[in-house]
Length: 299
Image (cartoon, rainbow, N blue to C red; front, top):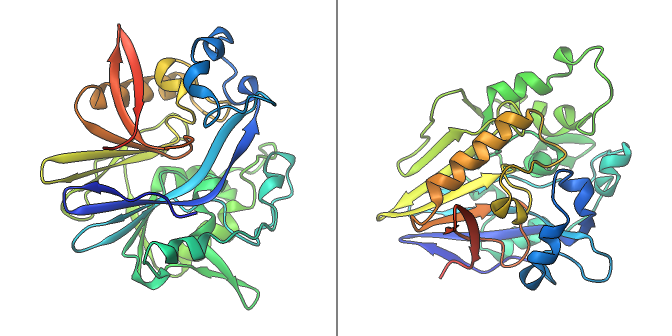
């Protein structure tokens, strides 16, 4: 479904949902998590962030749609439809058929109206709708957009650089969801420095989960938002920031980046828009003793 509209001064932000479901055991997603935290936080975890019956953590896969007075920006593009995903870790995305494009339309946006597509990183569940299947070919879904790709992530996932490496859950993603965009000449590359494609938007390096992972900061009228990608997969990581997801490629760097971002947002009225949190999906980081807590909601 298309989610609640959030406001940031003269900008609007919608969540465009692909999936939202109990999906993964806590120990599988967050292998370093102290199980006692599940009991300590049970009051807010159930039902929107952990399923009581199965014990599975609830995971959302969604895009954030930003509309400024001048531009339309899409942050991450989920897993996409019709993609061949044959590895066990990504089988849930194999040739899926979701109404994501209809949900985007319900927010009042057609693909050709999107000006920028910002992929926080090039994992399977963040690049899928970069392309769509048309007459047996993968073509860019957003033909008038500039796609913001991290060059470091691009080089990391380039199959030419992975010769001899073992199979990976991201195999195949480069070919169907990244290369067609590059071939169409639609990429605006992001390097290791802060990149500002338009006034009020800043793409910042946030490595660790992947080598080129980035976050997006939006500022309008003195109000601020942070789109944090996979620096945090679940709200429990706000309370336990040293706990990585099982998918973080550089654990030490991922922990450092997560803490840095939490500190930059804590008690500063910065709206945090993560990539996978359960309902209501966004909120603010506040202090909790010597650590952090998450206050859901953007009002």
